[in-house]
Image (cartoon, rainbow, N blue to C red; front, side, top):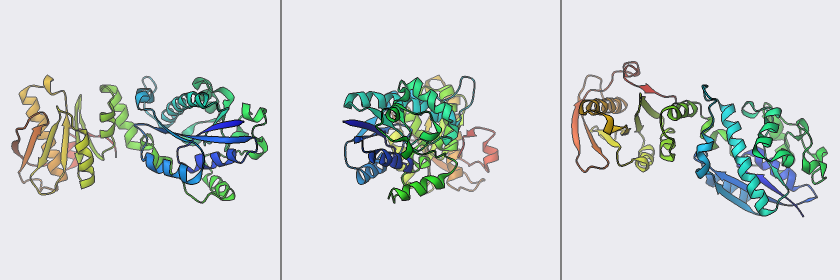
Length: 341
């Protein structure tokens, strides 16, 4: 019995690739394998799509323990770019998928990759597979005709004539193929699934990896729209809407500072720094900076002084200072950096 494991992200490409292989007469079962990562979002949507569209085994697997490997995305001495990020991620996921494939006794892997997506070429695809240890046991049905024949093609498990030569720069071809296969859903686009495709996130990650030890908590903070950095180690993250503030509540560590201005339902700030290395004067300077930023986003008039309340999470004592907000982002830039967004 020929079995395959399909790396199922919930994208239209992964849905179509899975359906192509399921229709091959020699393939009796296709296992769906979905990965959860600190960089991926909305796992529930991908799971719903998989179970809604296909029968058969569905496996969700976390790569949180391997997420440090996923941060090896920046070439030494270079800058973050989406291409290097995607290559590093694909390599790790193929390595994990290979282990699962061997565990369930499947014969080959299936992915929805297309040549050219995020700048990844056909040669890149071949190299990634070799480095992941998968070799020619990974089939990419959507771009197979642009790649050398794989093991499942040579063994006759799949018919190469029923595979395709699609590229990422022609999304209309994928939509047309989906309709031909009777697939009516839009899928779950990569831009909504993966933080690494957000332009500002890569810049923040690059800065974060250069100066701090990576943690899951730290990664979550990078996604907030209002994220400020005062080199070398001060982070100021604001939650403005009710939803953002509720999310931000989950990421306070015992040593973090919580700050808000007394102007009604204004922003809340999480301030993180190596406090034990700061003098009392430096601590107060950081607190005033965070308070002025928070007041600016609370739409306080530039010349008006307002009270700001703050406390460290490991203390029950709340303190108050009076500050005036920054008059503009330009004035603020003299004191710290707003990274991206």
